[in-house]
Image 1 (cartoon, one colour):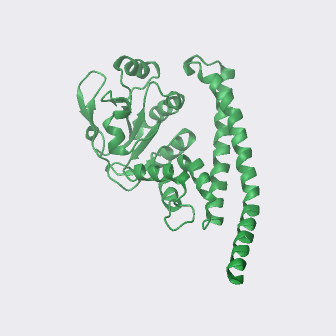
Image 2: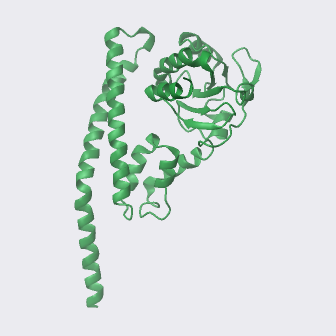
Image 3: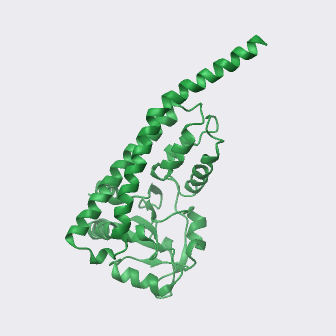
Length: 278
């Protein structure tokens, strides 16, 4: 009896120590979330306008917001990884893994979805597990899978017309109705201008379901690379074949058609292509 009581006391004491240890991390993550909400409000105000009509001041505001978001992303991700490592045997890391899952590389997410961890079966881990399952369909090291859809003129095309033909190919999953896609597109346009003549091809795979909106967006944003879509929105064949659960998303293929990177955006897209296509 005394032994049982003693074990219970020790268990509570251990939990209290863990809760005390996690508090500084919780405060840090809460502060990051507060800062995210602040810049999100500023971004939503700008997002109501078409990026093509931005003034120079508004362009600077967007750049500042993106830079701040990138910085917060890095700090949040680093902190979540530290929590997962330090408190692996507890339930605490689950909500933090879920909070940063879209910032993680495939190998990082795979390591965090460890069945032996103390947080693996927590409810918050369902979405990270689903994302990992999606990544398993398009992770680096895999060969690309072909897609057959129509181009803007209604002609049937295949991804294999470009993939595995000796060029680096960025397969860009997007849609005209996707605000973050439109926000990122100038960066993709810039990448195409810089690296197309050096051996880069881009193939847009649209999750649109209306032809006119799709074609209008392509023209308006200056997307001069090949496009394809089955106009089925989230029911697109690409969603099932590549495990696309959110857009913008992308895969970068090497000249043989092997996936070498996922979801490159912003400056990371430019620097990665620059290192490959000198």
